[in-house]
Amino acid sequence: MDNLFVSIVMPAHNEEAVIEKSITKMSEVLKGIDVHRFEIIVVDDGSRDRTFSLVTKISAEAPHVKGVQLSRNFGKESALLAGLKTARGDVVITTDADLQHPPKFIPQLLDQWRDGTKIVHAVKRDRSTDGWIVRLRARIFNSLCSRLGGIDLRNSSDFKLLDRSVVDILVRELPERERFYRGLAEWVGFKQATIYFDVDPRKDGQGKWSLAALLNLGVTATVSFSIAPLRIVTFLGALTLLFGVVVAADAVWSWFHGTAVSGFATLEISLLLLGSFIMISLGIVGEYIAKIYQEVKRRPPFIIANTCGTGGGVNEKDRTSGEDR
Image 1 (tube, one colour):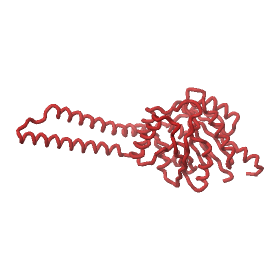
Image 2 (tube, rainbow, N blue to C red):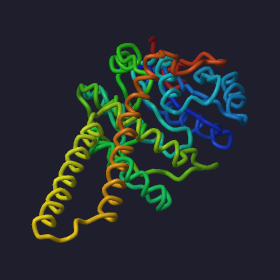
Image 3 (tube, helix red, strand yellow):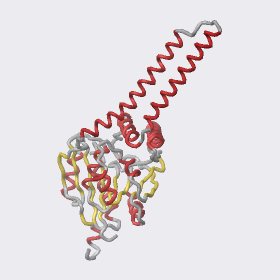
Image 4 (tube, rainbow, N blue to C red):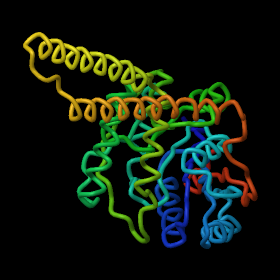
């Protein structure tokens, strides 16, 4: 498409060590492909370093770069939503700011889109650049979310291409505050495709995902897409009933045979099991109630404190081609 307008959305949190390299590399790739206009939107998710200052400096010299600064750290999901709402392109590509999502795969994403695909998922083929702890927790996270949420998240990432029609649905017709972008991108349907990429090592700095943040994202993903955990409560109730029947049968058997009925040990085990099942059940139900509470308050998922640049620069390759667009 000669007049194709591509938007790149990059959430960033304390990425001053790598943000200039990311923008430069992304710009080089976009200038070398067949698109008329492109913009790179960097969403600063409450960074405490010079991330937004650097983006401001770059945007003053590069008309295709735009920065969006959130008032505090709202989390990556909110930063992605802010970027999607800001993007104006015919297609929107979401990617991390640390260059672990290689920009060289963008032409492949666009080729799939030109074939009529509305959503293109970039799936990690290899995670050898990550430490074994990171790989283990990612495997556990994706496996649990896939099994409980009913969506395939194996080696999934936020590196995706979305058609404009899909972006409009995500930002206008899905009003939930507690969002899980990877799941929503698959849930909406439409024609989807997958490409595979190898994760590049971080160029500078350190990863920002803590175990607590990953656990919170896992809970949001599971609660947002499945009621399976609530059925676990029913299962625990049935298991408790079965245990009670066994204990009662043992007591009756002992009474008929004139032996002593099991006493303290049986009572102690029964109380511990019942107490554990009750607390687990309350915790599961509590997570759903907490998410409902967050939704009904209807607070905005993010607040924009500042912006810089305009975005939407014309591709230099296109400008120098001599063609009248």
